[in-house]
Length: 349
Image 1: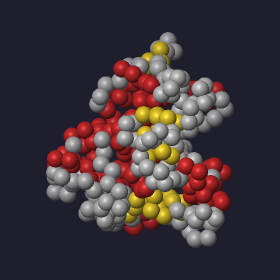
Image 2: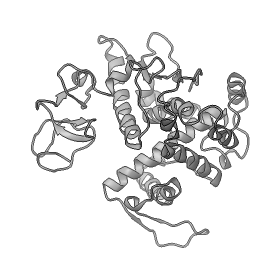
Image 3: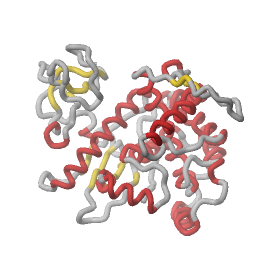
């Protein structure tokens, strides 16, 4: 909402189209504010990557841009174009992480704090992945044509920049939420498998033979079958998909009241996201009917399903486990603020 005229503005807005006020997003207050006031200045990357987040002093990087450790140089026009798209997705990711209360400790604050290397593969090959708190993204993924070719080549139903970032941040948070030697670690292995399995062998096997038949009943995606780390990351990404989309639907007053048809099971066909409960089981009761409607609308536009996934009871149990860890704040009580023990490379092709 515009703070001047109360008209609709978006999360990415830099100006109110109704009253002309220059706007930006203030991560401290989590509100849109007027730019140019005494303590609301544009991020130093405002011109370079169209960042609309605000800072307290001129020429500072905002809370999102400061987490980018490496990027293309200013003379790389194609790389900077991809960087702008990647940074926009990162800002949306960080907004949600702050909203659900997960710790965001940057690489300048801790040796293994969160960092983003957003790299162009124009000259050197780049592998998207996570290692020791650093999330690397191949900026070719911001090119829709490249991303669609990769999606088709790998047989994926869904591939977006935000999806990549949500997957990789899942790797970052796993050792934070599932501390070694805790009951959570034992339960995580029951649900996702033993992460001590050789990652390289699991990756080689997956790309040689693919997922086993019937994987859909246990995993949210084919890629999740590769290794327990990937199952966690794919499920964590879906947890973020569900929460963020339901929140947006609730903010816009979206409500699904039908269609009034009989179904083979007891699954409801109505959804009121604004009334969704606080736990994941109640959120899914609103989520599933909402996805039916969103997919039907997407097909009416001649596009692919907006949410091309099936959530089995086994997958719902995994989502419930992650939700419980996020809400428990056990990591906070133990004084854990970042992934100190994480030494892993989890590439995404």
